[in-house]
Length: 409
Image 1 (tube, rainbow, N blue to C red):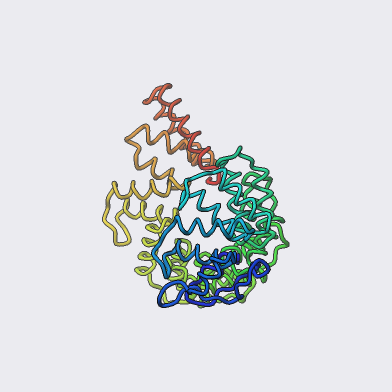
Image 2 (image 1 turned 90 degrees about the vertical axis):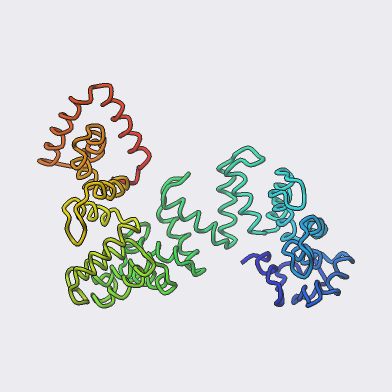
């Protein structure tokens, strides 16, 4: 946690980390009284105490104890910043970036962020990452942004650690390096971040950048799930279904799937439905299962959306026969890359040659043998109706869709 986040806790004693050497203000200071800002603090600020100046600045910015006044806030922040207080330098940089109490000025913003960053103010480091990454007020410089991100991550800034881990994991702007990703997720997990803990669980379960270890995976899933993180609750439930890293236990799976389903996690809803269909850890209840699948479809599960489309097409599982609703749900699934949905949507819309040709074009690379032969034959018929120019146009749409969805089948 940065000094800035500590300093913003009004109404309680504020811990002034890393400013004591610049100031005579006590380590514990209550800046706001029932009548406004503590008069003693105001007096210290007027005498040039940088920590007191900064606290007065924050009070004016937040309107706590005094009327909100951004210009006065920026003025007091400048006094503290010019005396070298890093958290005040960061705040003044933010004022210039946002045009808050001062004219908006990217160059001034950069200058004050750099001063604060040079003293290790991690929020300023992160601000500089964003500036160089986007080229705001400076020449865009990805390598500089990356170097600053590493500095911020090494300084313990959680969001920098997470971003660095994500970039290494997915190869965003850098080469994929799952070992480095695991290292940074571990640092974020050590700070109690639930998403990082769950991601580490995934990496241990599948041996991505670390040695495969089901027990470790389950431990990280549990740490995250105990914080109420729905994807981890689902993952832990899956561990109990398959007995990976924990004893096989359908009752426990039901419990954890249920927690995630309560947060509308689509994967948990689908898998909870399967437990009810098969009577695993609970009495069989198909009505409850189909209700859960409908919730999963509404929550965005492509598999559940496919099922909904097929149910509406056939008029089963309590749903009326409705081709329009069938097409609507199949399209939702198909647009997420579900090959079966793409194929079924094409068949449902076979009277519309353009739709038929487009969706079969997406499904074709993922089908084999007889289904592929049938698809090619049907698409050939559609091509004869459309003509070569229209087919070329649709083929371009297919390629564009595939380029825009590289992580989908």
